[in-house]
Length: 596
Ligand SMILES: Nc1ncnc2c1ncn2[C@@H]1O[C@H](COP(=O)(O)OP(=O)(O)OP(=O)(O)O)[C@@H](O)[C@H]1O
Image (cartoon, rainbow, N blue to C red; front, side, top):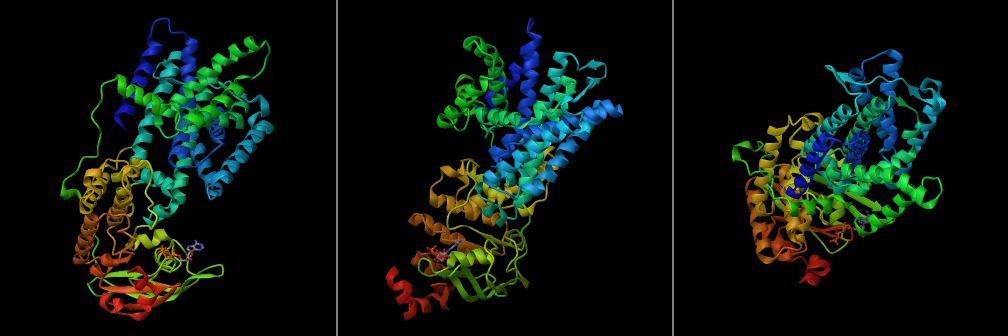
């Protein structure tokens, strides 16, 4: 968390703890604060789901309902203690989120949003029409929570229970987001394609975000049921889901603090407007919804990232600055051990009659070539020759129309990008694909996804720190290698395009590849940067790594590569050593002549 954000969060927590303890603080306001906490938990799930993973849900009230109805049924019908129903409520909301996600999360964009609406509406009518849930009358007589003589039926005690849940949820969320599975979820915003190329199972990452948001909503529902001591379908309908989304967006859907700020703004504003507007307009009605609509439109126009970033900036100005938290550069000893490289000169990849058609266009036309361990091979040719498409076929980003690719003796043609990455193939992209808003160091650490194994539970409980230290040691090492260690803590978007290409190379090196595919690595680099890159690639070759690169800078290519494969109109035009290619009349005619 940036210092400004920590300041704002610290100030908010101090107010949240101290305010209700002030003598004369009205109990009604304590209850209002509890409701802010309950809504904030749901909005926090939306921060992970919408702000971090880029998935939109209009169905969070349903997950609140899962938690609330679970404890309502178990406590009133089976006499279970609320503390026993808590894990059950979390399991039910998480389990149902998993099941719903499994059948829904293949949808993208507004189709996903519409599907979540459909789920929420179905749930609303299901509980409202089934006797099991007591239809629209709902279930009453839910017992209060007690623990070691503390009665959480008391307004202030209940508020502190909510606050404890909120603090715990914030800590767990922070831990999760700053971890291997968290980086996978954050990588979804950089494009599933890049994430899959580094071994991230993007579907699982989407499910994780969905389930996590569902569990937080379930926790909110459990608390809500014991605060209200009764449940009925109305607080779990689509209107409430929209409210939760409004809270997250108003507060700031990209910040944890934004969830609670948004919950506070909407809850307090609704409370005030519900009294003020009818008396001003001399009529009864839900006029506050119109005000919310207008405010949302204004907010999206003038501050699409919500109010939290402004508040954090203000808090940073008013309060003394803390030290910038940074992942410290660790010692060499912690770095993950390297993968053994195949024997130099051994064939590691053979593409045979590889073909890709886009409708009537043959982008790659029965191309064949091989790569031997420890050589640097250039794939060159004029624009549109099919070089990037060939890269995409080799890395599983595109599936071939026909042909075969054998890598280390295994047929990888048609395998998923994720699988090919596990075999030791790493790549960069012609159009840089870094995760926006993420630091250079985190972006690079994403490359080591396959070299670690910690899951969400270990991450949330911070049991993954030794593994994380090794991942970051590796990320630092690769940043030093590409000469960008001084940029480690910058947000990747702040770098020049040339530097971003180097970050992509560092990320690819984190996978410790056997084969490194570089798509136009020198594009956008200055003369000295190109020389440094050539030196780096030379060193990698000396270490036994195999490199296939697409590049238009012919000086760079001719000085660096051992062999060249030339493509033209999707077909292979020539293969040979740089000197041979430079003298090949067909290549001069099709490419080099015009490039010179
Ligand atoms: N996803 C796609 N759908 C349809 N056509 C595509 C797609 N990707 C590439 N093509 C087409 O395939 C042909 C080869 O494109 P490709 O990007 O592989 O060429 P390239 O050699 O990498 O070119 P450049 O050097 O300009 O990057 C082009 O005609 C391109 O328009």
